[in-house]
Image (tube, rainbow, N blue to C red):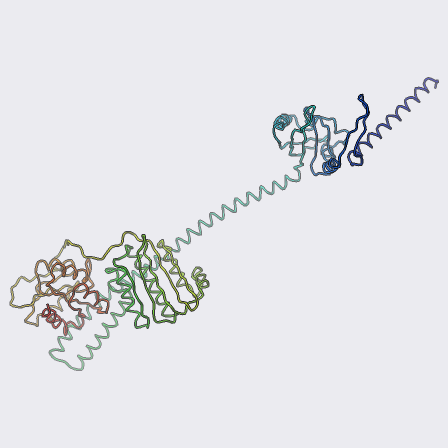
Length: 567
């Protein structure tokens, strides 16, 4: 090797050593900057030595950036990477020193580089973000969320970018999407099942109500059959037997009379238990007063407070209200430990309110309300009442405290305005020859009588009884209340023998109308059921007396004479 070649080689070695020293110095400086072991740098340049301070806050910031879970990159306006933390260099698959100086868009697919340009433009005004795919040098496509914001630095524009690796989040997001879908499906299923449950509950409630109404209709049908056929046959038999007793009595006749009395008594009781008499004709106020009378033998005195007029509710609703009130009063008899109760009915703001209360032993209201709501043992009756009221569009409320009594309230909307039970001022009658019989024959008898009953055999029996007396004459017969009103206008009888329970217009309404039009006409009430309330209602309508059909043979003529003599 020549001397010149040797000198050239030595120069290269020295230059290499110098460069190596500078590189080590640069690495030391970079390490010092990254680790924060220096607070300032002295840099010699054309303007002399300049000091650049690295504050403690910057040190904490650098540690944070280096150890954060996202990639951090600073780029210029052309996308050249000025700074990158180690996580970003790991994502792209390059050493840190080879990452700085590259263009960040080069790590994106050609299609997504357009989105990069849009991202940077948007970042000039406010923080912006895009979901992109980062391409590593080994060809892997990494889903990322790239956020960018312009830094307030001069000269030139710089942007801070945060790169979030979405690979781990993809499965989380996927699971979240699956869970959201499941939640939507579950919510839909719950909504559908809830709707089905509500529909099923409404159907069951309607079915329960219809079953209850069917029971009441069947009770009414049986009571009507017993009253209109069996009871009338027994009454006619009793009349005939009484006529026989007048002519020739005897032990067998007395025994037969006693048997008929028992049969009539049993029939009346059975009819009353099946369906309250005159309930549909006279309405709830009358029915509640009748119910109070029926509970007296059971040791319960019921104070009934009802307003004038009849609540405008359908017959079915009235039936359910009456039944519910009766059940509540029976609960007082069985459980309250008191002999007094109160039943009040008021009509306010389109609703009818029926309150049953007592000052008895009371009970744990919360426990029984729970039982009533669930229909569990001990509360099924109250549960049934609650369901019936809900089916009617109303509600059932109950409050009670141990030792302080109980208050139960039935509330239901009216179907219209309250109405007062009053006879029509004008009557249109369609009277057939079979229903109405008029006697035009003149007689010297001083008492002219009109018989009114919807059963022909009863009218025939009454006529047979009265024909035995010379001072009376039957001048006509009618089978309904409206027919009786028309015949009184036509015949002007002295006395009307009026049955109470009749179709179209009942005897009480007919009596009110007749006494209004013809005050001098005497009305004698007639009924199979001669209970206190029936007697009271008939007398209030203007009747002079009330006679039971079974006692007609012995008492009717006497009652007629007494009433005529007083008039």
